[in-house]
Image (cartoon, helix red, strand yellow):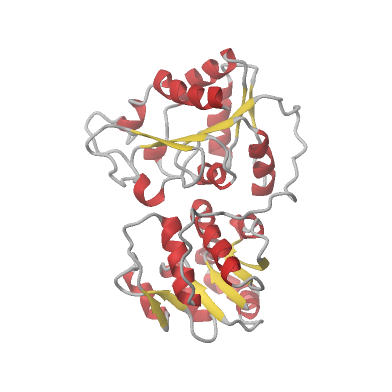
Length: 345
């Protein structure tokens, strides 16, 4: 059986879909998947051994200049790749307007959520085979149910299994030797309201170093790199990673003792590989999108306005939209939880 998955972004959302593929392999041992994904995250589908081919989009780039990318053949090339092979089923597992557009470009019927299950309601019009799932449950369970209903097998009652194989992920060449004992401090996030203050990260770094650990601090762009440098400035045992491929980051994460994360894609990477981790939550709801896996802990602000799902904090006490709830999570509190995880290993 051959199945095409359409799920474009983002990093954590892509990882949420991986256990569904593991379920499907148990139901149909000979199943193979192709996957349509944004090229920025093309490494993620390849981590599952049942994925045969990855078809990449550049929709963020295309959106800036549709006419140019039509005339230079880039969009035409994607359309050709999207329709090059036949499949037993085509399934949109993202079900938003972007993925619905890709579904419309694919010739033949597509499975996707019905109007009662879609968060971006018009997307359901792109699907011939409509699926109903409860949207008020964790994304991992939603993904497992979508694929099971599309391919007509029962969802296993066992815990979600990401089923990844990261043996091909290689450590990068760096200008420092990776320490024997280190923590990953994932400080970055796409929303301002998900960020823990820099001075709190600095305090946490000093506590980790005092306990005998080095810290590695990843970054995905220039702004995050400068923020990482500011955090690392407090200790020569703190190392800033340059922008790396997701394969490289995965190889480094595997060697870490534990991770402390903002609510961002690399937190879900830690969950995917069962790496002990704490993720800090303020503006988002762990019930729907929290890290999902073994050895995962969620540290949630106690403020009554959380989760607010706002990208800038609206409280009067906020400075320039920075999250009040995240600043109230004190480094001593966070280190106490993290140290308990480390002592338990």
